[in-house]
Image (cartoon, rainbow, N blue to C red; front, top):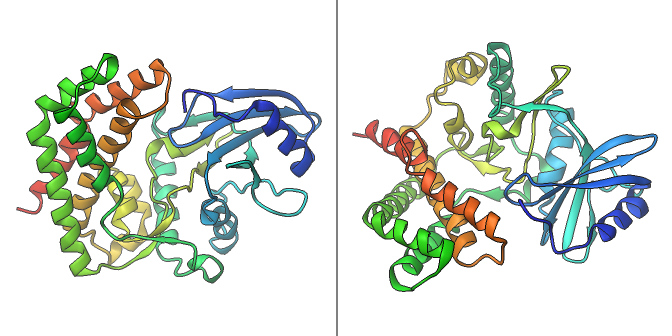
Length: 326
C-alpha cells in the first residue's frame, strides 16, 4: 500500500514487543505492496525485520505453507515467518494480523531479471511444488479454484459505475477512459466467464499453486540467495495458474522437469490471462471509484488501470493466448 493502515504504529510496535519479544529501536512504514501494509522494524541485537500487516481474518496457509514446504520439499527458496513467543506464525490485534520475516536486501526479478541459472532453479522449485500432493494439516483451509472469482462480479460493477454515474477529479478521468474502452472491457469479462464455464465442465487437475508468482515476488539477495515470496494467494488450482507467469522463460522450462510429460492446457492458460485482466480492472476500479484513499493512491490506481491496455501489457497477452485456441 502507498499509505499507512488505520492502525497506529504504536499499536503494531506493542504487538511486536509483547508477542515476539522484540525491542523496537526504529519502525518505518514502507510504501510497497498492493494488498497489505509493510514496515521495517529495527532491533538490537537481532537486526532488521520485515513486518507484513493485513486486515481481516488470517488465511493460515499463506503463512504456514512456506514453513511446511521448506521442510517437505527440502528447499531454501522459502522464507519462513518468525514464530511468536507462543510458537504461532502470526499475531493479531484489532481487525488486523501481522507476520514477521527476516528483512532482505537485494532486488526482485521485476527490477533486475534473473540469470539463466536462477530461472532453472525457479523451474525446479515449481515442478516440486506442483508435484507435492496434498498437505493434510492444511488441506481443509486451502482455497480451491472455482473459475468464478469475485473479480468477475466486481469488474461489471466498475464498468456500470463509469457508464451510468458522474464523477469528479481522478474518478472522472477513469470514467472517460472506461467509456472509451467499454465495448472491449465487456468482451473481456464475457470471454473470461465463458472460458471459466468451459473449465468448470472440464474439471482439470488441481495441484498446489503459489497463485501469484509474478516477478515482483521472486527475490535475489545481495549475497545471491533466491526466494519465492508472498504466499497470500496459495491455493489448489491447475498448474497453469502459476505457469502463465513463465510462458516465455525458456530457462524456467529447462528446470521444470514436469515438462517432460506435462503439456500446459491452452484453454486454461487463456482463462488465467483473461482473469488476470479482469482482476486488475476490478482492483484498480474499486480503488478509484470507491476507495477511501488519498489522491496519490488513486492517481496510482488510475495509471495502472490505463496501463493494462498498453502494447505488450496484460490485455494484449490475453489476446495472444486466445490466438492459440483458434
